Amino acid sequence: MCRAEAPHLSALQKKFASKGLVVLGINIDNDSAERIGKFRADKGLEYTMLQKGNEVAMRAYFCRAFPTLYWIDEKGTIMARDYGFQTPDRLEERARALMAR
Amino acid sequence: MPESHLQVSLGLACLILLGAASIEKASGAVGETVRYQVTVQESGKKETANITVFVLPGVGKAARWVLAPEETSLGLPVASIAFDAKGRARPALSDPLGRPWVSAFLSWIEADDIVKPEWRKPESTGTAKITVAELRLRAKINVTHNCSPATEETGSVVSLELVEPVTEESRLRLELRSLRFRFELAADGQFSRGTLEHDISRSVGTVTRDTDSRVEIIVLSREALTESETRKIEDEFALLESVARALLPGHDEKQVKDAKKDISKYRAKFPEGKLSGAIVSLEMRLVSAGESVAGLANPDEAAARLIGKIAPDFKLTDLDGNEVTLSDLRGKSVILSFWGYA
Image (cartoon, rainbow over all chains, first blue to last red; front, side, top):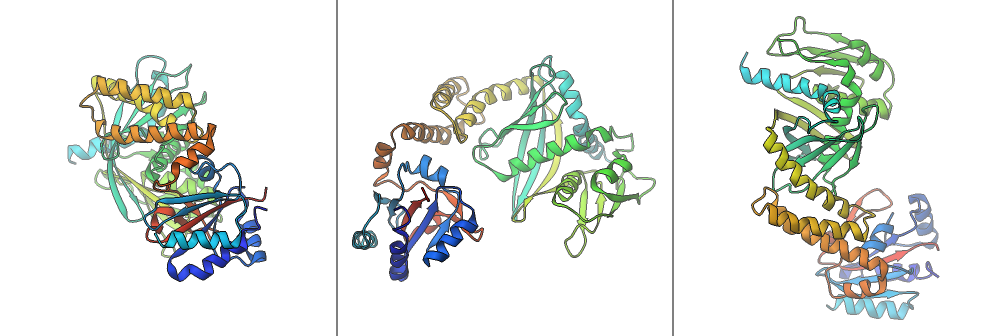
């Protein structure tokens, strides 16, 4: 469930990279770079993966379920938070709203 | 030789002996408090700081050294070090702001522990002495004294040649050891050959934590503080220690509360204190530390409060080892996807 969203996020990254969209995948399980790298390669993901984000997820962003998405605009302001699986249409709608800010 | 040179040279050598002396003193009153002026260089950036190291009485023979910076621009408590029963230094509290020179300074003090037994107070010529056998044993090197007799102006010059391949550990030790010396690398940057040179006016060292982070510490001067100066710093640290604890990862609600109390106490006691400039930022940090603790108890409410605010900044490493800082991405639209296998 948690990982099902990844290809859709990758598609968004690809589609909107030229419009300044950056997707950061933040691993919260303390997985090794190798394991995350394999996941990225297997799924053909094209966005940046960051390691060891547990502390950031829990203490700074108060995540309690995964996946959790935070949408941050050009000024660094948080526009929205989603948790649980989001459909591709919903993701694209959110991304367009974010970039329109 | 100019008098100032002699003082500095004695200072450096005294530092070496400080550990043992202070531990003995620790069961009684506050031990010798010393101020170091150091220059710290990291990735080309230089910073000069006055760091005070003082000793608080500990249980039994264990003592505690505390470092406190005196520049308001540096602001905060930096660290304390616990000594175990054998007198070995162990960092007990680290800088909540994570300034790299703090860990470098700690390493320097710890390295002192490694070499301490092999150093003696300088002779009147102002040169420190090291037991060559010990140096050879520790770093697996051949050591020869080049400069004999050592003069007051140059100190003693020691050259060394490594006889074994360098492991990470020996490399670290060698570098820490060289904090008291100028250590010149061979042209290829490896530790295959080098020169240790004791510079009597300055102590230069490099600490390598990993391949990307090199911190050089140059001790410019050292002086003992008066008792009243020491008391003042001790009082300041009583506050700052609780704050530092409250800001460390894993802090709990009580620590934050205690720290907030200490802050208001401090304000009343030292309205014009040296560190008053840092108090505002400390308080702000405590507020967010408190929110973080409260947020853990009720994450959904805390997360909801984040909407419309500036996203909390962070620095994490990507799969290639590059650091990514969120605030560097201003001007971009960013999606954070927190994920795991669970």
